[in-house]
Length: 359
Image (cartoon, rainbow, N blue to C red):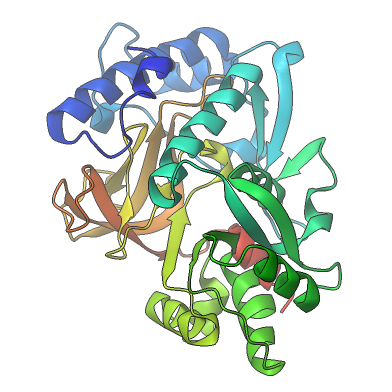
């Protein structure tokens, strides 16, 4: 099976052994590809005794600490094949990750993102409000994680406006006009968690702006560090937004620039779900063994997408808990989990959290 065949399958329709067999095959082939084409990866794999001829299961698959992409330029294709360089979010003075994409990897990321998000908002493009400023996407040569997120999700918008001006103030008249022009249509809103809280919700309240977004769906991502410090939970976030402007459908997602496209969407039950293109494992910090369901550990993410760089199996700096597999009340198959937070002493890196450091 190749990516094109995998894309035909609905993203949450396979579970258990069937999904694992498919992922094991993809990921073993990717590991061999990166071993053959990325000298730095080859040396690292040799150092841990990687067996090139072994068919690895996901749990046995070698993983790289995500921080290595801040330290090394890791590519598995020729430099002239790179069409896009993605950078992670980071506060001032932090080293950022650099992720090098060839045309094939970039295209597959877009296709997979489309499949995942369409299963939540529908296949038809709809009017879209981006809760950010257009200034963040103007440099198209070097993509930041925040800009890449906006551009990636923008493809779901038939018509798009930015809710904020360059001073991060709400474009109230523009939004009201947009909603009037698209009355009775489904509206798609996208933004990063802290930006929505700080520059959308708080301004709605402070300026007593009345918006009717009862027919809208909001997808948001990024870190929660600042909101947690304000004692705002996921429930509070959704509840206050609904009271402020009527939004009933709010979905968080977990993702990272090192595996763009392989996002984990929050379902109606509040759980993050793994699609057929990727998976998560929770590892104990003491010995990196696989944690039990309900046990906190370090999140490992695997994805079938990274071809131009060895990012298919990564140990993150986030802690999470596996909640179950194939039995979520929403009906989606695959593992579902929740994020607990960042590892102690790990750098701030979420799009929301790095921006929120200004506050």
